Amino acid sequence: MQPAPVPNHKFGGARFVRVTEVAMSRLLVGLLILLAPTIACAVPVFPPMDTPTFVAKSADMLIVRCLNPDVLGGGKNDGLTLVKVEVLVVIKGDRKIGKTRLGTIGQPMEAGKRYLMASFGGNVFDTGFLAQSDQAVLEMPADFELKSLAGKAAVQQAQAIFDARRAQVERLLQQLQREKMTLDYTVPLPTPMKLGRVPDPTSELRGQLAQLDEKGRYGSPEQLAQMEERADSLAKQYTAKDDQARIWGQLAWVAGQSGIDKHTEFVRKYATKCLEVSRDPLERGRMYSLSASAVNMGGFAFPKGRREAADILLTGFRELLAQELPEVAPELPVVEKIGHVIGRGDAEEAQALVRHAAQLAAREEAEFIRDQISRRDTLVRQLRDLYKPDAKRHGRSPEGPEELRALAAKKLTDNQVKLLVKKVTE
Image (cartoon, rainbow, N blue to C red; front, side):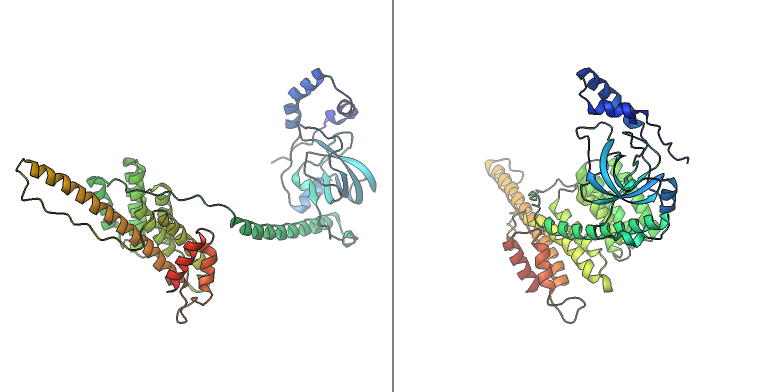
């Protein structure tokens, strides 16, 4: 690929400076606004380069201290910026030490800081200089010793500056990441919505899901791939989100029951797809449980894996708390037999049918609540398995509950955390 041509920039001569520094009429302002896109497009921006190429392409390489990052001020449609600097070191070119003005394409600079600046031969504002890439305006660490560059070739000097800045950026990134992790605790989590029962699948879909289980469970990788293809076909046939959630959830479940340690990525992929569309609290609870079980926690991976699994389980647990479930599962209501009145066609039969329908609805609701409680308690048991101190089990140290407390505090209220930790440690 040929390098981008260096523009002649006739708009960078004395005429341009005169135009920008004197009061312009409204008409001229309008014309410049119309021409600005053309001007901006005429300035090529060079991509990042390795150090030898960067030095070879540079007509001027300077170490400067910024005195004024925007001499002209005001808005800019093309990004071209005139900066005032003090040249401290000339690495390449025939520039002189001392104060001067240089042109940039708007890279951020700050007065008082030192920068490595390079021009590839461009010229704006009659400076004979244009920094045409992000790499061409590089902030230098405040503690960088300029004396360390003495006697080195241009490539070596540039490499030393790049290395020092990269090390500084890595430290800054680590510091920012620590700060972000702290601030993440302050982000209000969206309150989970209470979910109701979803309609049952059709008998045809139930049959298709059963076939996925029969043909895919304990299957070879090839059979799992076939099951995946079949599921994709079903998802195109059954387009309702509830049905698609069941299809993806079935894939995750079958793979998990076929040896979750062998199919971890498969399980997590389809559990995630299920969670993206599912509105069934029972299905969602099962997917969180499966996803956590698929996390690698063997050997040295245990500390990190435990935290990852706990985060998944706590997310599911928080969703189930939004269901406002009782602590203890309710008893199942009685459903009376009404066979002895069916067929009479009298008032007693009509009353019995109404009463029977209400009893069936109450029983279904109780079963729904009981199933949700079972899902919630399963998540708690999984957390207990990870965090209850046990000297005979790897990684289950006495410090575990405090780690769980800290993780749970990011998702739950103080009282919810207290009750959860109690359940996990009892």
